[in-house]
Length: 116
Length: 114
Image (cartoon, rainbow over all chains, first blue to last red; front, side):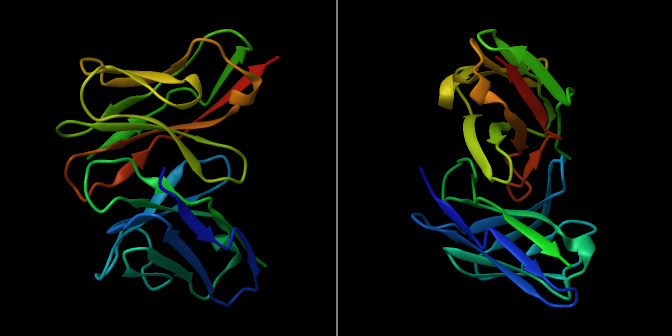
């Protein structure tokens, strides 16, 4: 099956700093990648949809200036949490879809962000 | 707008017994339906999907799901539960339009007791 790799798996940062999370599709081209946030014991909340070569589409209530998304190639999307605060601590998960076809999305292993 | 409901926060079943995790959905047009499983501090693992065709879909690890259009349901089932099936299960739906966003249910935690 298709593999999506997310890096890092865990990161601890200080308040006020920025953190970048990478999402890579290793063996397929993904025109669309999705970023989710998951709070403890809760479902995944879609943050934004990222299309290669264009600006990301953010869900209502998600601050685009705080959560910067870049999708520079068909295999890489990045999420940068800027000026992180403790309330940004969460589990962030990316997913990617094949370039064509109605297939399921493949998920990265997630990134546990802790802001201290 | 599309939505997914998983009415049970938790399902308890004894090992060897059949299990069912419920899911209902709402979407315009034909739905694309998915089940994923998540283990602690891990990403989601794909179990199965319904796109079109037979209403009974077979997936990974012995799981299956039945698509019922009239009841707008897509319940996950397994004939004989294993302790190792204990995890968090998410039902998800994606419409044929709207950017192909996948919307997830709240999740159902499955406990299988030995």
